[in-house]
Amino acid sequence: MASKRGTVRVDSKDLGIGLVGTGFMGRAHANAWRQAPCFFDLKRRPQLRCVAGKDVKEAKAFAARWEVASVHPTWQALVRDSSVKLVDVCTPNHLHAAMSIAALKAGKAVACEKPLATSLAEARVMCDAARVSKAKTFVWFNYRRCPAIGLARQLVSEGKLGTIRHARACYLQDWGGSATPMAWRFDASRAGSGAHGDLNAHLIDLVRFTTGEQIAEVCGAMEATFVRSRRDGAKHTKSTVDDATLFLARLSSGATASFEATRLATGNQNANRLELNGTKGSVRFDFERMNELEWWDDTLPKRLRGWSRILCTDPSHPWAGAYWPAAHLIGYEHGFVSMAADIVRVLTGEKPILPLADFEDAFVTQCVLHAVMVSAHEQRWVRPDSFA
Ligand code: SOE
Image (cartoon, rainbow, N blue to C red):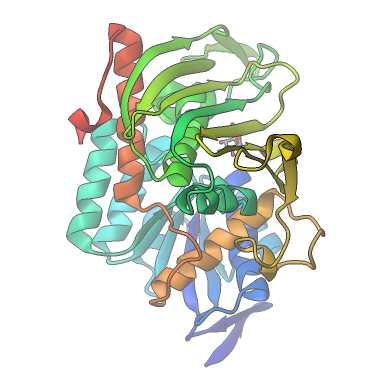
């Protein structure tokens, strides 16, 4: 039965979403839940029932702007709300575990921002809680849902690249210089790590997702902190995370891989790049040109070989058909919209367009993040699966 609370339409058949966090990701997710049923045919309509944030006034302003039906004074109250079927966790990393575990104990599905946790130990407890509750879990690795990344995965699984010999992944940003004031992302007690958990988590997930392989061993890891103190209002506060973390890896097939994550790559604003080189061809992706996938087909006669630039906006590309006519570009927010739609599909017994990461899957990525730290500190080869 549809009813109205203020100006917000609430229907009991809808899938009630409770959102925790009103920052950058809170906005990206609120937009996604609202847009998903407009673009995708879904069995149930996700409905943002309530929001909670660190500040009630801010949460009220957020609710008014994004048309969220109600505001809870605490995240605990939101988890107890019986209209909430899925708790969406978009908070700083140190809060992921407590919120997700409480929601799972209350029998709710959970969609948690990446990285899953600030440490391997925390991630393990979250995974255990998910296993016990049997509720569905999801982790917002949004870049999986770029149509170009989906196409890269399809080309690999169709054998178009042959055997993958080499993966090159880098995520280069430049917003973390000394002029950038203190924020939770620079505080190890709240973020866990810096560029490593924030950016390498995406890269590790993307290499695993597109190649279908695991990261068998890591070595040559190097982490660096260049900015040790940051302006924090009138004072200065210690910046306690890595600004850059780089490492090498071997995939389960034996292929080599390199990973670079930094927030100090001046001039590279959001260069999330992936290159896969195989025996029959290669692909290249750069998020700064997210609608494109470049493909080299090495099976063509030599005189015809060259990079082709595929505009991944055709209805035959994953998710693209839900949006605009071919060649009309999509943006950052569409990855979240497509992910919200795929989450609803899973919750209503349908298949997602391509697989989503759950806590179990994100735990595997967390093991790689952890192995890299061990490799950096002990200067040796480390197997991520030794922590599983
Ligand atoms: C900040 O570094 C950030 O917003 C990350 O937290 C996101 O995961 C990434 O997609 C963009 O950069």
